[in-house]
Image (cartoon, rainbow, N blue to C red; front, top):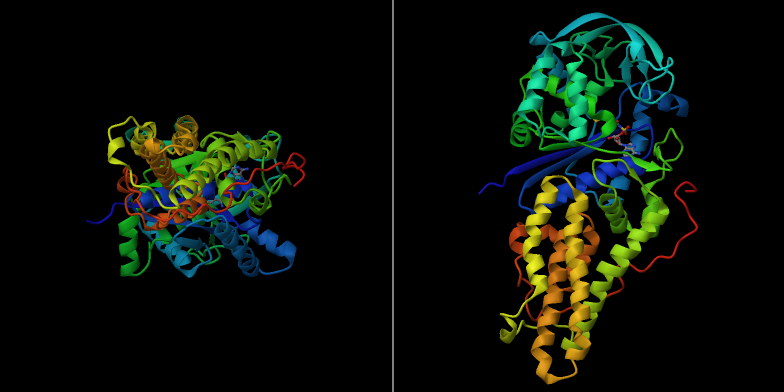
Length: 523
Ligand code: MSP
């Protein structure tokens, strides 16, 4: 049977800066979902990439004294390397300077032009280069960009316009028909009231610089960078390509979810669906907007000078703990304050003392009492109450529901509960006492088997968040890695751990950390 598809995307990042915690946040969140959907049996396509055109990038290149293409070619590997280091499993990496993308953008223009959705007019207004956004005079706040507070420049050009205003009612109908299209709810309300205020036609070409995709039917015009960027979601999977490429597009489109930050919701929930409606293409199923990572109450960003590189943190905590912290401690969808102190706290409590400690104790005891082989679960213990089994049997349901709701903290919590219960179970059953007499040998085997089995199941469900550790734990139980799992629903069935498997203790998964003297701000 053919697997159902699942297509998810991150925003494509501007190449004016190297990756920081903020841009890495969207990427690890998307990766956790991609990993989960794969193990839950879907044919996943996970896309990320780079937004390489526009004035902002052209200016960065100019400041560096190199061509924009050279600039992009230098920055691109920095993103790719960072994603690799963070365990990101993207299936493709689109760059808007790719030929396949430029070709697709031009095909899209031709389509909209032929359908009568474009016209030429003079644009008089303001432009914020850092945000690559147009503003009218009355949108400015004290003459500055209403979004980022920086200076704006006046633009007076003959531009191509997209008849966005024609789509206001269609968009409002769509939001009503598909209440889950924009998540979370607060973002949905924000977008609905914005569209209810009426939409103006959108300038979609520029003539005063040339770092962009040329408009195919009017020389001297390049595509407005946001339009160019949004189209990556379809050009990467084959839109505007050969027959074979188009077939891939038909296979994966519409996207199941676009993950974005809350700052770019209007582009994704207003302009993007209107563009697709105009072209007669299906609309993505969901746009999920996460909040900002804040340090000392401020958004972390390159321009504020408070951007920390992911590597600074992974060197201290390791990749898995890094991913775990951001996805479990910050409620996905809301803004979240992050701090070094809190990161150390979460690391020590959840990972060193709970998950790491459980693995180390149980694997150690298996070595000590059963010669490092998984004991068979004794017949005599089959009907006995087993709290771990009860919780483990419910975990697929609760975890699945949390992931469906894109609520990472709750998914992690479902596993954390089993972990806490397993630590308690070991404590209560005191295997070290059971090991003292032959009469309790069956009980001892049942306890160790159950604890190992709970560990195996936790490793499965922790894998989207902490992939390396999960594979390591499975390897210590002589099991294949998570990538081989076709259906986690089947794989997590209680009793799946084969008796007789060799168990290796290994080093501590999360050695306790004692750092109190570095702050994120100092980094
Ligand atoms: N190039 C556009 C996106 C085009 S998508 C068709 C862009 N790029 S960006 O590099 O500026 O930002 C990309 C994403 O990173 C946005 O979703 C943004 O919200 C996110 N973050 C940047 N800083 C952030 C934080 N401090 N916290 C959380 N995410 C933030 O916008």
